[in-house]
Amino acid sequence: MAAPRTEPWEVYARHDREERAHYLGTVHAVGPRDAKVFAYMMYDERRWQEMFVVPRAAVIPVVAPE
View (cartoon, rainbow, N blue to C red):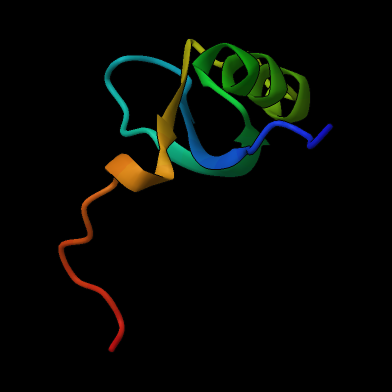
């Protein structure tokens, strides 16, 4: 039996709603529920006010290296 296919999820967080979100890194997960758990486990070294994950496929580059 093959292992479930994972996809990359980008992780962002901020300390308060007044500041911009900081890029924290990437987790690989089968779906959003696992991505949330993995992001919290890997990147909750600080007291973030807000943390969120975005599937890499949903990120639209505005300026990208050629």
